[in-house]
Every structure is written in C-alpha cells, then in structure tokens.
Amino acid sequence: QVQLVESGGGLVQAGASLTLSCAASADTSDCSGWSWYRQAQGAERERVAVTIPDGYTVYTESVKGRFTFSRDEKKNTLTLQMKDLKPEDAAVYYCNVDCSRTHGMDYWGKGTRVAISS
Image 1 (cartoon, rainbow, N blue to C red):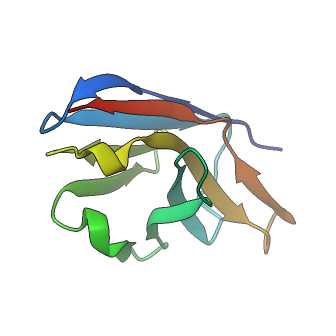
Image 2: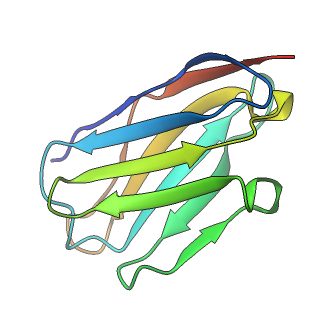
C-alpha cells in the first residue's frame, strides 16, 4: 500500500505563487495516472491536472497557463506549481495516484489547504 502526503499549502494573496508537493511512500511507476484534485468549500471535488506514463498532462481549463504539474519518478514525488493565484483557486488540494490496474487500489492523500486573500 502507498501513502501519499501533500505539503505546501497556506495562505497567500491573490496573484501570488505557491508550490504543492506530494510524497509517495513507495514506488508508483507502475501505476497508470497521477492527478491533483481540489475541493472548495461547498463544492464537489474536481480534477485540476492529470498526467499519464508517457508524460502527457491535461489541465482543467481554469488553471491552464497558470499551473504546472510535474512528476519525479525517482523521488516518488508530484509537484503542482501554481502562479497568479485567484480567489477561486482556494480549496483543499489532494494528490491521487491511480494504481487500480496494478495494485488494485486508487491512492489519495489527506490534502493540503490553499487559502487566497484578495
């Protein structure tokens, strides 16, 4: 089983940048997808970005050009670089690894909160 731990959240002003990290406790290179999700208060969880083994990454429209998702396979880490943050980016951010095909499980972290002051 793999534990995911997010870090890097905090309170920033609108327009600022923030980098979130997700550390996996074990190798996930045999998994099929790595994602960042977010859930704002009172809203449903939405996927912010997803990357697949060949490196192809898809972003939700609202973050395109502002967020960058990277994966370090050797360090078993995921990073979400966020710039030009907007009040609507405020949420709890979760990392997710889809290992359903190889481990029979989908892994989630407990989340890190991002708050934006305008």
